[in-house]
Length: 126
Image (cartoon, rainbow, N blue to C red):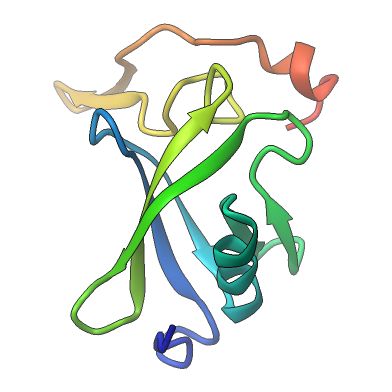
């Protein structure tokens, strides 16, 4: 579990990918504690840079990410976490993936329909 947390100020980039489809669901950051908790629990845990604390994906929504495999890049400063998404969506805006916008003719457009209503899950908070 020898990752280079020092290169980016104590964090590694975590690319979250659906293990079955290969679709990228989100990108987050892990410090050493978040990475260890992810490995120990089998559920993706991140470090929130804005709140400065650990958070397990799904702790509010219930839409957890069950880890299927973890790999690292050649520099050991990023991880690819293949998961099974437990719930209708990963994005707090109500979509299956955080990557639901596509660039079209110089504008970002929603390229898919929402998969759930965020207000019903988060009570009006994101």
